[in-house]
Length: 266
Length: 266
Image 1 (cartoon, chains in turn red, purple):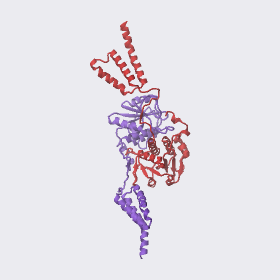
Image 2 (image 1 turned 135 degrees about the horizontal axis):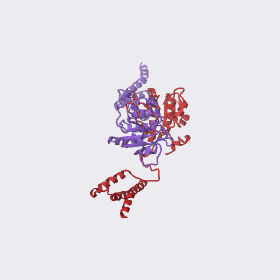
Image 3 (image 1 turned 30 degrees about the vertical axis):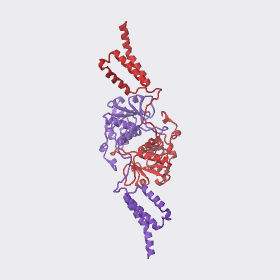
Image 4 (image 1 turned 180 degrees about the vertical axis):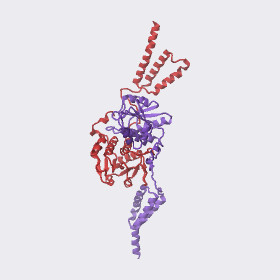
């Protein structure tokens, strides 16, 4: 993916599929709207809706804070009421930092993401409500939602800024549809893991050299010393190229041993 | 957890356990250091280390951006080199936005979090390196790490700010040790789900009332109409209190029917 983040703007949405709408209710600051754009585009989300933002919020500051994700400001829609903003949606989620006196299921962002993906795959339209920076959503907004989302965080310090709340929700959305292996080898050069023939060849090269220098002594301890040395290299999971390098290193060490031998032979 | 975010500062770390160190290498801006403090404390992380930050970074701006998490600025340590900053650690992870020409395993943040938790539970000390805002980590820094972390995100727009990268790593760390059920009912009042006796009682009240008004007609369609009506309420997963409210609603509708009957009887 090297360099992918330097693609021209117009291409930034080319991998974005249908995702949930992000609905910001009574947002105060242009900077926050811009940072939300950035977090959304990071996560492949493009449907931004504002409900009754503070009059006079700075579009210029939003553009700066969006750091190239301001294409979402161009397609963003603004509504007077939450009811209008969610009119076309079939499933609405409300993010809350604290419990509410409402009998409504509370999901983690991870569970909410997998549920939304199922709903959207089934042809439904979803959206997530985010409240005002200072005070969150009103109860009247939460009532409009089917489900609430609460992020499990340090219970003694739960305060997330708006863009970070959007980022965590969007991150889980992206992960729920992403098939990146959880662990992968990173062979960007022209190499591969060493096979066991190459590795054992290096072991034997090293051990015969250490026999020669007298390191593997006394004989009754030789096998356990060899095992310990081999285990270090086993754990290192060397590449074919690294094995070649190490054989060069061993030869380099042995050069002086050979010279000393040659002198002794003269 | 209502109100927990309003706890006094000194208590904000009371749930924090041993976690990975967060190591910011050559950070430029005080604001970013402050936002990292906030993201760390959200995720229960407290061990912040700076390597060679830009001279003159604003501690004041960091404190403002930390929004109450500036207690981490007081315990933060500053080092001249990455080597010094990681000297006491046994496992070091490097976050990178792009692949490197290095044969080093690449983990998702989720996998890295579960691996670090295993390592820390086993008595090891872990840390995660984050590079400069503009350019990330140098290859020399990445070489010092055992493992790299790459966040799966929109491949056409991967640019995360520093605090957001820390947040996603910390979020996965917190989730890996958190036992919040992925879905829970939220009964904050004194109520509970209605049992089936209460629910069927409401169904029968509604259906006898609709028999009376003539809605459930003709008789050969009655059963399928009843099934459809019951299914709506089944899906609504009503509480005992809501069942009582709905019986009141039915009675309220029927009041006029009773009055009409009474008049007819007169």
